[in-house]
Length: 460
Image 1 (cartoon, rainbow, N blue to C red):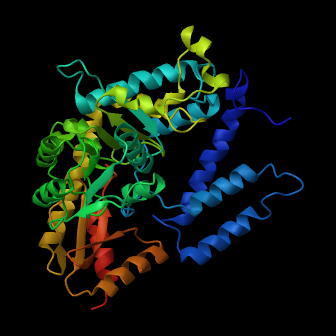
Image 2 (cartoon, helix red, strand yellow; image 1 turned 90 degrees about the vertical axis):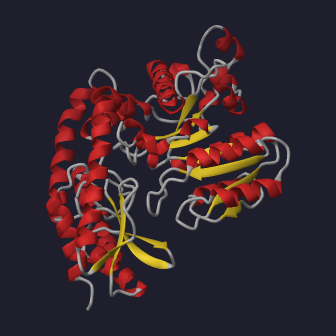
Image 3 (cartoon, one colour; image 1 turned 90 degrees about the horizontal axis):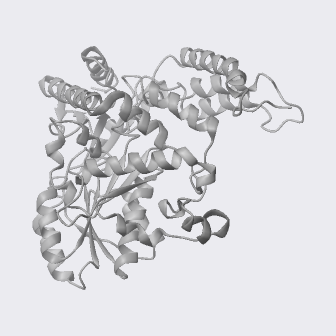
C-alpha cells in the first residue's frame, strides 16, 4: 500500500522523501545554471518530455519523484535568481514554504468546520487582523472590516465587482487605462456593461477625467463603481487615491482599489504613506504572493464593512445545516465562492508571526531601495534611458539607440539563452524593458551585471 503523508506515521514517511526532493531541487538548479533554462520553448519542452516519458505507465516508477522534481527544477524560472526580474513573481520565504508543506500534509478543506477545526479559526483571526491593517480597528459607527482569502488579485477583483453588483443591482465600472485586465474580464464574467475607461496620461488615473465621467454617468447611489490601482503591473505606479476617494464620496460611487502589488507597502513605515486613501475604499485587493514573499497562492479581498460579504452566503445541508449552525458550528460557505479550498492562511500567519511588521517592512524597504539604486545606475549610464524613478520596485529602461523591435528582440534573446528574465511594458508609445525587483538579497553587483548583459546584447 502507498504510504500516506498524514496520520501518526506521516512525518516518518515524509522525511526520506523530503531529502529526495531537496536533492533533486539542488541537482536541477545546477543543471539549469541560471535564472531560466536555455534553449527556448522547443528545447525546454523536449527535455521535459524525455524526463516524463509515459505520463500514465502500466507499472509505476519508484524514482519518479526524483526524476520529475529534478526535471521541473532544471526547467524552471528561478525567482530567487537576481537576474530573474520580469514579473511580480517573488522568491518565497523558506518559513512560508515550510508552513505550506504542513498545510498540504494536514490537507484541511475550509468549506466546513469538521474538515478544518483549527484552520477555520486561524483564518478568521488572521484575515481580520489584515483587514484592520487596511481599515483600522473600527470606525466611529462601530463598523469593522474583514477579508477573504483568494487565489490572487484576479479572483479578488472579480469578487469586488460581484459584491458591488449584488448590493446595487446594475453596476457600471469606471477604471483607467492602467487598470489590470482582470477587471475588464470580470465585467464580462458577471454580465456587466463594458467598463468606462478614463485616461491615464502619466500612467495614473486622471482625477479631472474621472470627475467628468462620474458627472456624465450619474445614476442611483452606489450604481457606479470606480476601480483605482495601487501598484500598476507595468510600472508600479499608484493612482492619486485621496483625490479619487473624495470624488467617489461626492458622487455616491463605490470605490475598489486594486492593491495586489502595492498593498505590501502597508508593512513599511517608510512607504505606507504612499497608500493614503486606501482605507476609504469599500473593497481592496491584496496579494501577498507578490510583495509579501508567499508561495502561490496568497490573495485577499479586504472589505471595509464585513456585512458587505452577506451576498456570498450559501446553504448546502451537508456542509452548513441550519441545526449545526444554530448549535455553534461555524458556517464557512460564505467565506468564498469556492467550496473545497486549502488553508493558504497558514503560511501567511506563520510569516506574520515570524517576521512581524518590522521584519516584513524591512524586506519591503530593501527591494524599494534596490529599485532606486538600479534606476540611479541606469540614469548615470550614457547609453541607457530611464523611464522614471520607481514608485515601488519596478524600473523601466531602454537602450537610447534601440528601436521597439530591438528592445523586444533583446529581451527574447536573453530569455532563450537563459541569461536573464526581463519583462516588457509599453508606455508613452514606446516599448521598455521592465525589471521588477522582489528579491531582497539582490546586490549592487547583480544590478550592474543585469545592465551589462542588456548592453552586451543590444546591437549598435
